[in-house]
Length: 297
Ligand SMILES: [Zn+2]
Image (tube, rainbow, N blue to C red; front, top):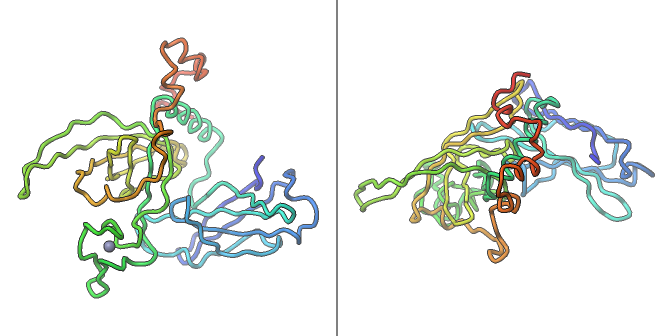
């Protein structure tokens, strides 16, 4: 059950962001003395870790004006989440992350959910690293005079100019299309390059510059992103990907996963061996998958 019945971020003034939230009064966490519970509002650039706390206090406010959300960057978005702490257990119950975006209709949510089912069968798990656009500058290569990095091959910021380079990774399902490796002649020798396209859900949003790592350690950088929308709400995202050469510094970005237990191919895809089974598994008998591409409202 959702802890908050409504969360919303919007502003008509670029100097700040207005954030609202409302409790779902039916949730058990809201019982007892409201002053015993702590409410906190947190913000993140990627929609995942790390989260920074904007305020923490008792349950007497349902709105916050975030003056620290400004910043001019084409590929920066701020995600918010609110949490409430239960006094007895200390458990923190969080809302889903949200940001300034069109509120999806029920139809948009349904289409997105069905596309997620398709992805979990035809896609594979990948690691998505959102590139940092703010924070502490790199201690090794950042030049404060020229305001640029001195080298792209930096093992501290991986060429981004910010310490660590990327936010904590997400494990998401993505369908990456087949690609052709091409050999390019360069001054330092032949270079294998490839480009392809991919599809995924709009959260967490893989903005250009994001790093994608496949289960076999093939690494891609997102070059461009387009989305399929319904009434301006994103329901699906299409990406242009550039395959990085193994000599690139992005191959130094650590992937911490127990490989012996890691299988990026979903078990449902392995189990499917006939179209009948597939229809049973996805409950597609009365639903044409092409509907999500031809939706007319
Ligand atoms: Zn650096």
